[in-house]
Image 1 (tube, helix red, strand yellow):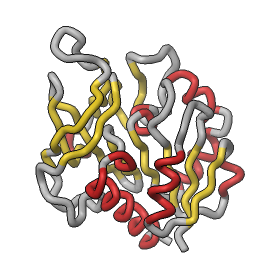
Image 2 (cartoon, one colour):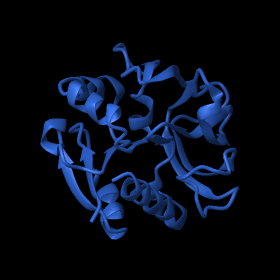
Image 3 (tube, one colour):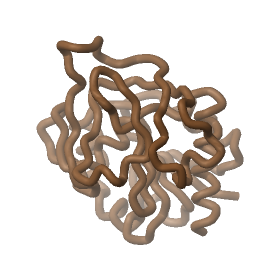
Length: 205
């Protein structure tokens, strides 16, 4: 069985994410220190919380997290979990984890209602994306966010959406997979993505 750990920032309910992983065959543990999770096949950074408190939480065990990255253990970053991997964010004062070059910007307050809560369709730009295997273009997914990422290298963007601006809806780089939307709240499309991530973890064992 594939073993996946969810990192808990202590910021909110991650039950739906845990349930989705378990429904699709993963053995799930909830951790707040990466030293607790030395023998896992994948890590999930959930999308619940605020930038600075989450960065403080993960910085306490950043060395352990860095070891997972170095070992190419698959990581799924969801919403905030995606944003934390960048160099900086307009949401917070602290530096990001600086694993992905780029920044996190606020959605344009003069153009759209913030936060963006609801369903949007995806333009899948990388047809070879492992996370989107078996998922048709223009599928609908669920967003809850006020910020969006701007990677320095646009080639890592695997899908886009539009909400006042073009949003990188997902990225893939090495063993890191990120979504600005919430797969665990995105019905059958999201369930398929969760299953795909579990399969990625299985193949990397």
